[in-house]
Length: 227
Length: 247
Image: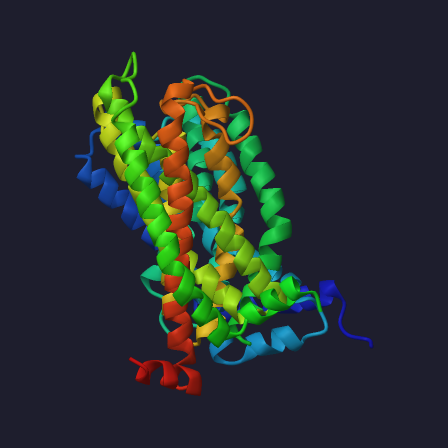
């Protein structure tokens, strides 16, 4: 059997996803807009005091990025489940886990990456101390792919439901909490003058593990949902 | 076929499991109540702790339910794995019956711990690694239950929720070793199933009574919950109809 190679199939899927997103450019800005709203609301609720804001800036950034990712989780496989392309994924000659991994990559590229790029700007709104910015960026760069991978498992579990609503959040949060603890913890440690590298290494180790296991778990969940 | 193996295989059939559960669940509850009664009575007979005074007696509820909160999750994941690999319908039912019981044990652990923490640590709650991981465990249990009830097809629901349970098992070692890996407000392990316990022998008897009692309690509620779910799934079959008619 001469099917497409892994790279060909992955490329085709990635190009299709990005093209679909480009045709609906308005939707693409939603996660970034949502994170901006969270940041603005926090800043206003804390009274806009620079000292108070600087102390919680990195934590607020992490929560804003996490919530923005959570918001877009439900759409990760839903469109494909509704129009039947997810069934074609299962029938495809390439492994389902590989297609899931490519979809997670496109999810990360379109929701998390713009937020990471906007982090210096949003950090400025929160009076984030400049010496914390590199650690925050590093922890987000390692942590957000991990969030997308874990989120893919949850999205795959709920793909069989017509409306998942709050359930996605309930399922995703226990899995997200360790990432948040190490991610926000690394910035908090560097703010106290301690070495942040330990927490970052934990995030990296978690990312490597999830990179291997999460697509397999998500693929198993899709098979259950569409059985 | 070996008679034990034959009995075990037959237990997978819904009507036979129903008879088995109906017969043994009351016995499990009875043993649990008797042991719990003696255990709690004994818990007030042992001498008070030299540091914590009488308030340490909540230990006899807190620790057995904390152990069960983790054990039940492990049992649930094993049943879920069996259900996913060999497609045994009864194991799906048993795995899903574990979730609410485990959630109850976790809630008891959190509440008793909080009551114990107020006089000892001066606070109801602290974002300490062990407390936080136990809270996450509660959310996981709720997630498994929520997912099971959100999907219409019962078998697909049980398999999806079972997969979540298997993913969540990664949390168990983190809870168990959280007092070792991090500096924690929560005290370290004082009692151990195997090897030496750091607790005085005179204080151990009520603990072991309570520990065995919660096992039987779990077995009893697992059987009766699984029986109810089993009957609900099999509703419409002849044997259920006959069971319903019989007084």
